[in-house]
Image (cartoon, rainbow, N blue to C red; front, top):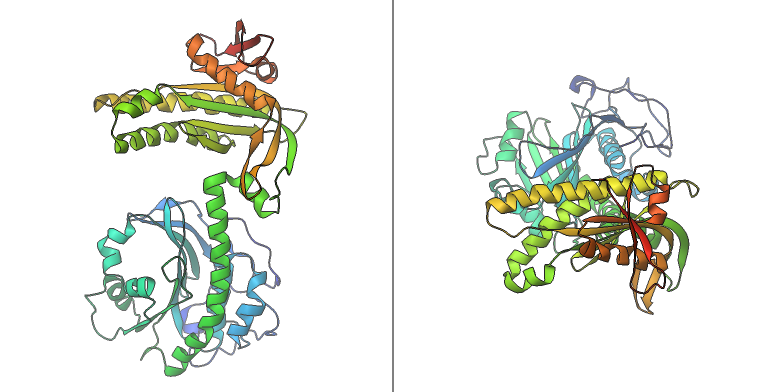
Length: 456
């Protein structure tokens, strides 16, 4: 994650040891600030590479250096509502929120915010804050986590599922909650979890932990309850926006989703552009689907699309449509006058897809599963990129003669027994050598089309 710009660039200490944070009164050496100003500097990333941790379904997306100093000023709930919307980065927002609570004499040592999402791979997202480590971690929870022992014994399970507030003082061992026992052994004395506004049948949850002797006071609990409506409002807005973006990315692709959210929603509203077009089609899918059971057909399609789609995305292609067992994708150019880079990305994606399909077939062959074969057509041409369909049911895609020609070229792969063919227009701008296979009649065109393939 890049360093976000913020409203106040006054530097704050990178780290404050526990002894420097007086919980009953803010340490006198800490600077007092105008409550109307935000004190969050840019967060510094610490190894933000995604990795799957010891817990199989918990994935840390990034760890960042936080403020490291309490912020005075009070009225934290009002700050959340008035200033929170101006802080686009949720990690930054949560870090500042926690330090503002510390500045209000709330003895936080650890805090976490968990939000359920709608995503084919991710069940939940969250932020985890640590005072002494001065670290803010962003994490993802993967699907399948709900079946684990860790979730079954989680202190926030009922809060997530039923919206039940939870509090547990940690003045004695808590074997029934392994997470709380680990926190207790590290010095925690009290733990509180509160539900936010229900979303998609589950509740986002914020949890607060202290290591202060005696735990949270009644005033602390009141402060959390007072803050909850404001925090729920901003979390709900951000979560809905993230879910909307995620679903559009998943079902339409990032670029189409971005255009739709930017307001490109009217029928017949589109942009003319030149792009490299890729169309793929699985061989003999009809025959395979007739003789395989339904779950085997789904597994077959998953294997096929995993092999074909990932290289397209890795090479900056945009998946626009799954057409049964086929794929329509484009590779726009960064420079409208130079399509050589786009052609190379498209060709690399096609070749990598064929290689991965061969790898899949080796695995499938070992278990007696049928072989997967494909045809890929590449073409360069002008398309209309935008909304087509009925007045109240639209599809965001590309249309035009160039798309039709790409489809016809893909169809020639069956007749010419080549898995990959390109048009002459593509071959002309592609820096990599391609071999002409001559002129061939193309359905729907009066003139034959010269097609090209890889050497050998």
